[in-house]
Length: 121
Image (cartoon, rainbow, N blue to C red; front, side, top):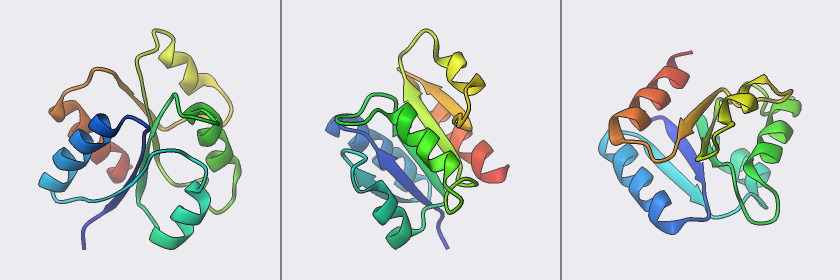
């Protein structure tokens, strides 16, 4: 059975590209353009991993990550943050930190390697 990946990103082109790369590599992909319904989506679809953009409308990806890591239902779910921030490594030092970071712009191999690493952990 294919591993499910939830992508939460408001950039439609970025979501489309990541979805294409991941589905081409055998993953099932679910997408959201904001984090408003992320918890209900997780309960419904049971993803194996989440890729969150650091900047989302309404609530940013870093705050969403903290909520996921503080929630007993989702705290073990691997979360990868996508960002172009020069201070991205600081995200990993915070309470409720993501499991990994993808630095934008990232290549296809980087995306696949990061996803595979987190799913194997």
